[in-house]
Length: 176
Image (cartoon, rainbow, N blue to C red; front, side):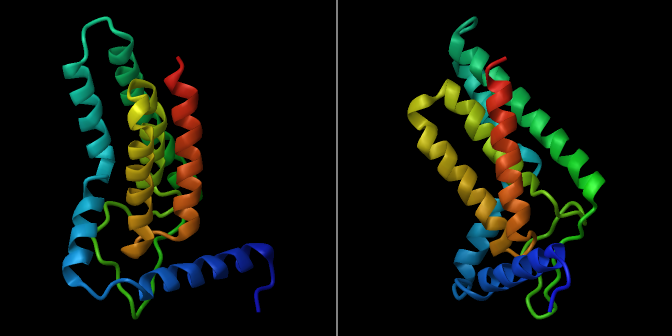
């Protein structure tokens, strides 16, 4: 039995991760597709690409172009902030001996999820440039974030914290 609130929270995180890893993995093609989709979020690559496309297709001097530029900045800031938190916390990635990770990772550090942080920062910031696409942006952010525990490389709390950190960062920086 856990002796502290922290140990209890970690045990809950492990149980949730195990539940996520034990369900919905019966179709190898679907698992590979989710892993490939998730790799698009490495280093916020898909979000930087969206920002670059937005800059390239928006008229010079337009509010939309400025919103895309701020979105790129917010995504970059969220990435840097996430890395600083990872270095401060130094939480190792989850390890379930009988359920190995289904995708490679670029770091041994887990908290918070950079995929979640950058995805929610980008969704928040790019919603200023593409208000009609806001549900799609947040849906893509949620899918990228959810892919990480599904693939066994993040605890659920890594993803929830990253989503909160990214949302706050994106909202604060999209207005400046």
